[in-house]
Length: 540
Ligand SMILES: *[C@@H]1O[C@H](CO)[C@@H](O)[C@H](O)[C@H]1NC(C)=O
Ligand SMILES: *[C@@H]1O[C@H](CO)[C@@H](O)[C@H](O)[C@H]1NC(C)=O
Ligand SMILES: *[C@@H]1O[C@H](CO)[C@@H](O)[C@H](O)[C@H]1NC(C)=O
Ligand SMILES: *[C@@H]1O[C@H](CO)[C@@H](O)[C@H](O)[C@H]1NC(C)=O
Ligand SMILES: *[C@@H]1O[C@H](CO)[C@@H](O)[C@H](O)[C@H]1NC(C)=O
Image 1 (cartoon, rainbow, N blue to C red):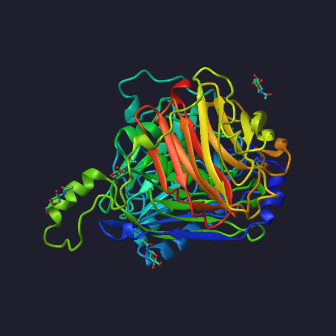
Image 2: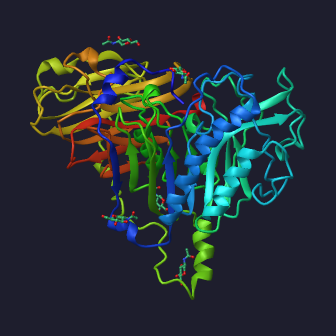
Image 3: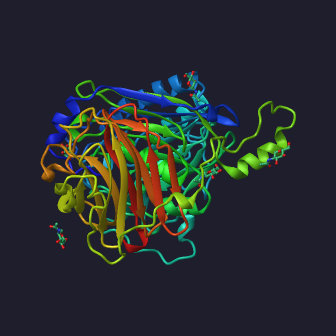
């Protein structure tokens, strides 16, 4: 979870925002099988001294206060018909523990692939499992699948099914493992899945699991869901492995610090769901001092999301009707549907994307040129023609400024060239500066990952050096076509509007040769960022 990247300007930024909860649903989503999903953005009750070790009784007392809220929200969600609810990462204990100070919070979570266990109905089978029992009983009492995150202690040697055929990895020096863990309960309370977070983000209390776990679970109402946690969303493992298994629905507990202009929580949640063509059920923590808010339910072509208002920190429950995407489930349900099925069976109903490779300009940049010239010299003042370097999210982007109310420009970084055609409405024209940025390289601050990014951003001021800095409002509506020649098929598109409004791009198209085109028009608010965020997983 990008937490350390927090900057002071974040505080000012939060004060300008209003509570935002938006549902976009199109007529496309009125057919086909559905289920009802809930996510809860939880204002976690924190332990004020996470570095002081608590007794088990005190740690339990603390977690039970958060569990009370989970119980209420599960009840409210179930009343609205929810069949699954997702709670955020770190939502029961909070953050900033040391390996020792978290010990009172740990439970040993049995591997559901080895053992069937219903903690609610069989509470005495395993000792020191009060949190598991409570979560299980919440799921059972309210009759829904429940996804929560907690801290797991596993003795050495590991006994997971994953390890049976392999030599055991070396045990940590204190003789056991501690994992940041998602647990999934079925609606009868039985434990369905356990996932140990793979990509930790400065979490002193936890170990990285010695072997990757790719975890999914089945539901009777929508088929299979994959599990990932927070920072995992940026990495190949387990996220792309889940996609490669054909999993189209993901549950995603997170504790994500917003970082504009490219990685605010709702922006990247939307981008991932759209880019991977999956449904993401994302539950974030609400904590203003850490810059954490932004949760949502994101089928590929609609969304319900929430971005909290500063100064009024409170939890937020979202409940949304979502089309089933699991192809296998759809196929088998179809067979058995016969008698009861009144609805047409449509895998995913939406307007077809026009496919026309002819529309795509071939890049005018030579593949090896380090920087390209502005193509729009004829229609723009000469001052727009020189690329400049500026840091965005700690990465050295090459930028070109947009000048005038319309134009066409290209900026390149290494092998990546980003092309933009745009039309800006006059509104805000004279007072807002925009730039097109390109970056191809490895991000190295607070995590290491290889990127290729094309981004149209509103600069925070009127100086070129302000391009790439955090800003969350804008007045200029921009119709645009953004294209890049990516060296990866994993490109995550997003359009972020003023006041943290997500817009659904009108068209996103990937061609076999790696080009990605995103087009958008008719914005309802000003443009903050339009981004094609490419991940070069194989170069990490
Ligand atoms: C947790 O650590 C972050 C820095 O990583 C710090 O900003 C924050 O105040 C800490 N929170 C608590 C509750 O100690
Ligand atoms: C779609 O929006 C309408 C209101 O415009 C709402 O009543 C309905 O519940 C929404 N559908 C879904 C799937 O949430
Ligand atoms: C569902 O059943 C209909 C006939 O009832 C059939 O035409 C259709 O191909 C089936 N769809 C799938 C995904 O199996
Ligand atoms: C997304 O998935 C749907 C099936 O759920 C499929 O029809 C559609 O072509 C996919 N879109 C892309 C861009 O791959
Ligand atoms: C930008 O930085 C690169 C090195 O990262 C350098 O080669 C290039 O000349 C710089 N461009 C400008 C316009 O300063």
